[in-house]
Image: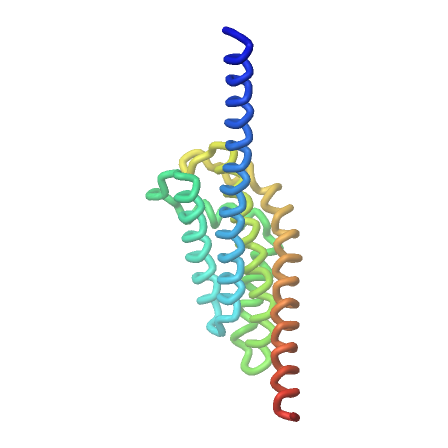
Length: 192
């Protein structure tokens, strides 16, 4: 092989490596967008005033999120088992307890609905974030739905649940700020 051919081969190898890196980063970014969208939807489902219906809704949202992530990573998604989600989430007993308690509190007339909705909304978003991160990591490492082991992901799930609580709280603050800005603009336009 002459020098020019060797140099060209080396350049092609570098380009392939760079292309793979960019493609991986793009795939991860798109997966994060899927999770973020589902976190927002999950938070909204936490506002459902009917006790326990919010939990059923959350399970369905997460089921759909995992299916979407699997499709995104080109993994067959026809055999998703809802017990995957349940066993993963049940590993974080405090989150499940708060979610269940918040949902039940909604049944108290008046203040119960408001108080329960707020806590369920944040926990719902946090749980969806954690579930999404667990499956992104699993799929990024070449895993499939058939070889997913909830027990091996529980520690990572707990870490991501903490991060998810912060993200959900920040989203609520952002929404409140935007609402306040909108109200301020409306108030200013009415006074002029």
